Length: 376
Image 1 (spheres, one colour):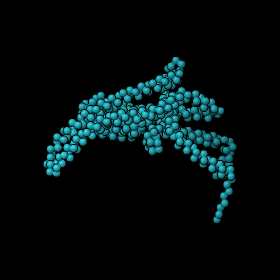
Image 2 (cartoon, rainbow, N blue to C red):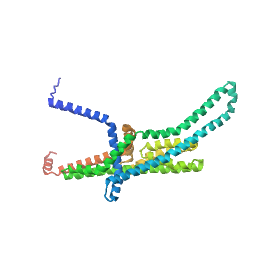
Image 3 (tube, rainbow, N blue to C red):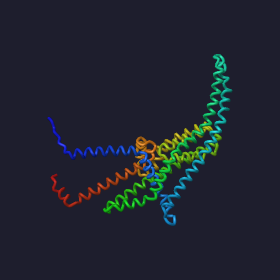
Image 4 (cartoon, rainbow, N blue to C red):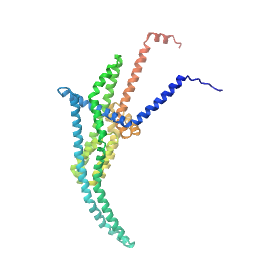
């Protein structure tokens, strides 16, 4: 049996236009993904910095948000500058120390090769072994000397994106200054008072989710930093590790710990490399400690703290991070928790609004009469 379907020209044209618009929107998003990423990061930073900026503005005589934002920026730049001052000199110092000691370690190993002299002489490998030892010394010295420069060069490569960083800071600065003005203009467009109050309360709750996430992640990073400091001081007392490294390396863990789930791991790898240049035994012990600590943080500390900050369950926290990392990599993992918290707020608000609307409809006289007249 054949079925004939008649479609009006208007419906067909409308369908085609919707498909074209959807495809065009995807293309525009893909082409402007870098700019959208910068805007998203700027918005996130503006929301995170808004509480301290608002507090500073209230303390200023003129309540100037421009002055408050400038003060907040100076504090952030001072912290970042202090971070670089703490980290770079110890890395260079330990790299140079390692470069000086590696050749002597190879010489000591070469002196112990008498155990294999019979084997070497039997097969005439003296010249080959000597060449290999000399080559290893040259390569080890070169690698050790350049390792510190490579680490510093990694910092330099990050600084090479200074243009994007400046744009990010400018966008965040403007959002902090103009944000309240734009919000007042947005609320001024509402004519329905009930809808205005509902949406304003919704925005406030989402804002509390973002600030709660930032405060929670600061607490998680602080726990990781303090724990690392204690372990490094213990290693200094027992294995002769330089105590001057404890505070800078703990600061590295703290800053890297601001990235959920994977940040502390990245920091541990950097700390492990620095410790390896100074004391391989201390590096091994630290890495074993941090593997254990990372499991505790990922499965207990972070979910527990963030579940209270953004009102998500521990399972929801872990699921959000896994999905965020899968979709957006490191950036997706950073924003996954606040995004999930905001989606939860939206969902609860929508369900509550639907429940109230349904209850209101059931109280309508006409609908009550229709419901009573329906056959059982």
